[in-house]
Length: 364
Image (cartoon, rainbow, N blue to C red; front, side):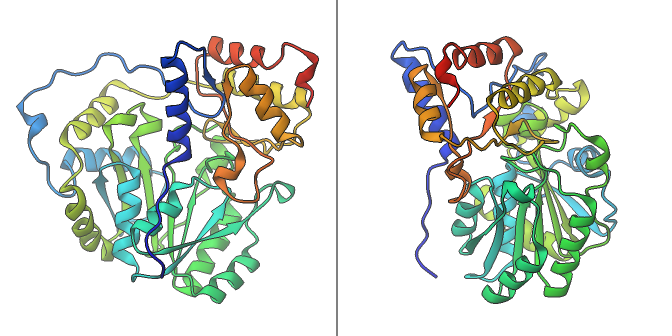
């Protein structure tokens, strides 16, 4: 295994670029990162907020997070542990379950941090490419061959997917779980957009049952508008709980108590992402008007359209102070795509779309 190589998150870098542009007095807008609503009715802080919680998290939050995030899973032998954000949960699961130097298959396009988390955990992330032609479906025969070829010990993927918005169909999910059972691989599912769903039927069936090599991670960040609180939940098989907690405790002691208290308050007061149905339709209409191909996303707040003349579109957008994150951030073969984020107030999204629709040059 080579030395650890970490990159700065391209999504955080884009947000920083926009902040720098605005600091110089320039108008700047993002078409690829969200504008979150502000939570209302924040709670009063007391002395309990600064006490270290149990290493597994506040007991009440563990119980409630299990019902909030994992009620549709039939995994009676799993346990819920609270983590310091989804990244810490993913890192702890992979570091605790796998031997150093193990290979991890990561279907792409994907959130780029999975590769950096693997690297930080002493593992080798291996891209498993999918494409728009097949609607980003997993070719499981090819995946099994690649797993055997590199000796992969785990598969990590997001459901729904960031950036495509694809929900893993029930039959495909079951076949993937069967593959992992045959090859004794860990299956790690990151469902951090579990409350931002546009096809409830598809989502409710996107589960597997009674699988003791399955880890499911979820987060309050996107679902409950608590990005800075850094609090998430991990549903873990019993055999993994203690080594997982040991790793997590080593790096952060426990999930920050203020974040856990905010998560409880969010559950009590229904802090949640508001409906984005209107914005989703605005985004879809814009993409269809351009004639771009895209997956008909069913969850998250992203589309991932393919733009034949992506360089021209990028330059056209930047000339209008609109920042775009091109698809190569999510995998090397997706340079003709970009991530279209529709999580923002409708008037803001309408303004950004209007900026990109002012002249005939839009038809690139």
